[in-house]
Length: 125
Image (cartoon, rainbow, N blue to C red; front, side, top):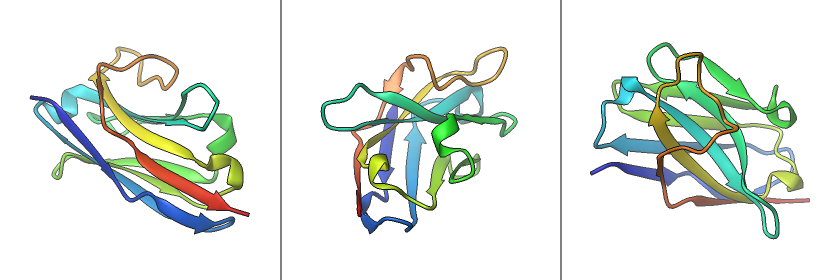
């Protein structure tokens, strides 16, 4: 059974940092891409970042480049999202998701096959 469990969300002031974790099980970790997505109240879900576990290559949306860093630890089957310089507009429920690795690298703009339950991130101004 595939499981993705997010943790690390919380309340932080603008300019602060959080590290989200996504613990994965039930599939061959280095054969999958992992993506982080978020959904703010009243808005559509959007992709944030993704990582190809086999080689560590990453892609991120422009609005988080330079502030968020995605990484994977294959020994722990865990993907992290380091979030720095947080802004109120980063407030959302953050989800990690997994899908078989794409040929040309991960893509945070597509649907993934497996999803976690989400973790709330709230950034106060």
